[in-house]
Figure (cartoon, rainbow, N blue to C red):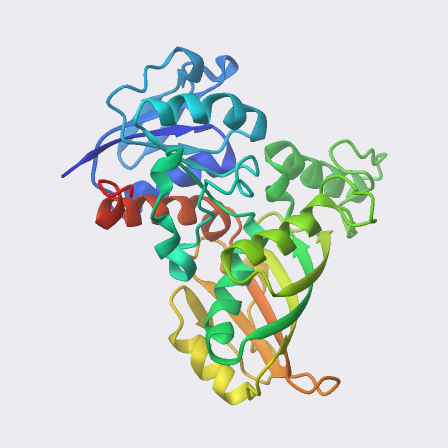
Length: 340
């Protein structure tokens, strides 16, 4: 059986990756449609050997479309996803718009695919925040064995998570520094080239940023509401690839040796953990890869049952586009016609 798939936001970084991954993984499509805003009308994008001309979202009739992969921002999702879902097309949304909606599953297929049951309430499925996706991939297999009590995470997030213009700003600022031109922040609050900025998304009343709040509440929704999590989210001068320094406290004992063995067998995870120079993975090495890489697994001697992890993933792939396509694969493999 084949399916008609629409990619909304197809001209953006994540939208293009969605098209690439649909082709790479040979998703059973009968037709793929590229959709975006009016300013992108007619722009060409690639889908395997095909070239697609982008159509305007607001003019497209979703009747007969089976799945819509959305990566166009919360405002677009809020306006269009419910309308499209009402027409029988399942929306897999990459924005934050529906993640905390009780009637919308928040899915990482390797972690909580069973939560897809009941998606038909709104015909919308939410893709988690990119930094949350790689985190829960590493946490889930350990939580199953030793029950996580508390997580402390510091992220080092690439500029691609903020879009094309943010990537352009890193490039422009880097060049400006080398040729002694002025550096003027536009997308970021401070200079991003050769710097790190402890500020992603807006500040909240308690002093946390919304990105940090997302990591906590999304992890609780996906894994376990009893997990306490605190985060500091940092933008780093890296084009693609998010890294996370993760400290985990468990209810039950878990040795670093057993944790390493568990993670080696965990779906979606790849352990690269040699205690030698270069025996770990960095963001530039994860670009273009499907896996979430885990390194620097070691005991935390300051708590009774604690471990440290270093977690790295391509945020445009597993953090967004790949996870969305995997949700679509899970749908067609067993859930699409079973919405109860």
